[in-house]
Image (cartoon, rainbow, N blue to C red; front, side):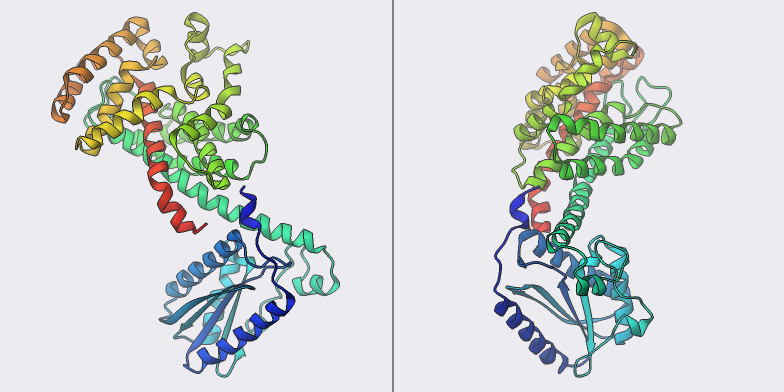
Length: 463
């Protein structure tokens, strides 16, 4: 994770004490207006009080506080943030009984990952404060042990560096969850858009099941619905893992095996997304790592990192005793399949997927038409092991030839979709399903969503 996010100036003790006096003065001025006042600050030990991840954590607290009190039905009267050398202070005046407001704020500690790091003082009258004890609550627990925090603080039971490190760890964990949610949503969205794209020759789409007899679009929707947590978990691994990209693969592989089990449970044993679980899991881990570093995410950077993460997977093709379709095709003709695509940094997506998507959108295609254009280009240029499995080299070459001709002949969206519909009948009749190309369509969409959504995500984080 970006080290600069936990670095900042060290205010002098006089500054910190002065900030406390100013806060007390502000509190009195706000209390003169009546109602109940909530003042939220960040519990930040150590000499460094203002740093990017700390400010983000404090502002997450303000957002959580607003959600909590709005959910409890307390009307907001006034709010303001004060950025002081000693930390972010958030003032919120609400209409409500102080004890009830305090009950709501105490739940933040239990509900939110950063809750233990926030101090939410509830004041009323001339400065009276509602205490935890008034509500029958125990003292706040120490960050590092089960004892009361005040007791450990007085006895200095833990070193300051140890406490600061724990605070930073909790902040990083919380950020990892935010990054995971973003990447997971992009991956899940890519799967949903891929299955909705219509027509897709030989594949499940909005019109029919193509060459498949054991699945339909609802099978794919069921599968995509259970995979969001997996993709988010892969991104979190990318955020928090400190080893090399190659080592990261072994951290996310157990997650992938678990995801395959969840997929099978949701689909009653049908393989809807095994290839996508592998490819998008690696890309989520890569995107998480880049976002945690504060690095720019462009397609080349992301694909290069994904290739490094995936490279050890090529060793699977050399393993003895594993009789898989991918290994058989590799031994027979050297086709690397999904492992090769990932280890090489998804060359088909770089060369055909994203350029065709951007080209179609620039020409005014609908989103569905743009996705169909991408799929057609990928079918024309991908050594799809799913096609090899179903139709051998003859079937693969037929699909590639037909898709290439269609891509060249159809320059308008309607003509392209009509041509794909004709191919759908042909491929279905011959039991050909370009599932590998469909997975690469999902990869294309994921990368597009991450890149185009990055600015909005960064703005929302404020880092």
